[in-house]
Length: 378
Image 1: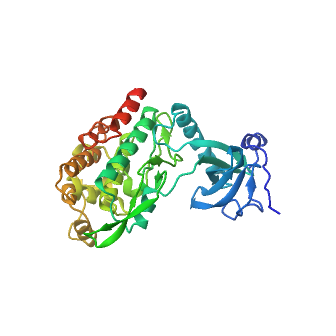
Image 2: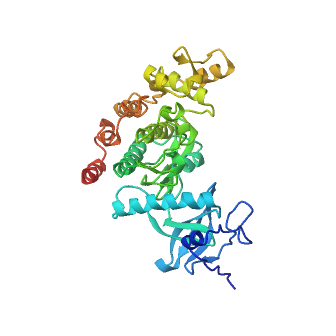
Image 3: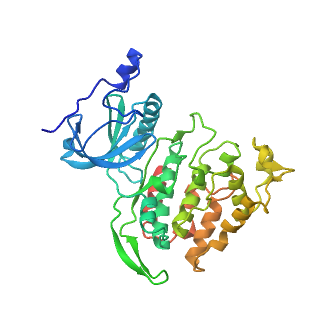
């Protein structure tokens, strides 16, 4: 006989009673819901399997019996207060997205429903496929072809521009948070590498994970973004806004093109040294305004190129244009776009509304539709 779980009182009721939900026999020690395949939540969601796990909780694949037995993804938040509060903020963002994009034109994942289950906030979404990172990893980190990068980049810029128009900054853009709608692939022989490679059949993507998304009027945390995609103004604690997302997109697109991370480091000063190696000196104005003067000496980055770390940076990094894999026009256009996205000064960094009109996208077959959608937003 199938075990069916039963729902409890709402989060609002918990707050009215002033009581936190105790971790009980339904939860692991660190707050995850204990479940098995075949369990049913809310007399509706039948759990099939686990799709992934993060610090926030787990994502499971379910059959939604209120939607004709269709498959959905259910994000089950840990039964801990700080994660419940973060989930509530994410739901606010997802509701804004749903209200602003009822036709699902802007490539952001769609929230279907949410509910509280024994202290676990649960959010249901359309079911997507592999992330662009997981596909890259499964493909032995062989880069995506330039035409596929163009289509993915266009959608990412479109999605994040839509967020910016709605006074939101995503703050955690990375390949793991961009998912293919369908990651089915064909095997193509790569003559240069002398191996078969996976070529995704459909490059339609969705932007996911709005748990850190921040409205303009909300408190802005000092540190945001996953390390490798963190903008210089964040590292230097100069304050941040929409341009930090643009920097992250530049790093993501580079990774799609090369198959490896542009800034492979875990140290702030080394990160800044990599930036200087790739893009030249950090502007004096940013250095002078930075709260992180410990990274500098006499107005320059305090960095020894002869040290072990210095040699690592010199070996690992080179000026951006030296990463070109071809001298074809579209490759040069792509790198010009990267240079504009990886501009040090946030005020000089290209806005996504301008990026969507960049020559790299000029002749893409779906660009005209993207442009019409962008005009609709203005």
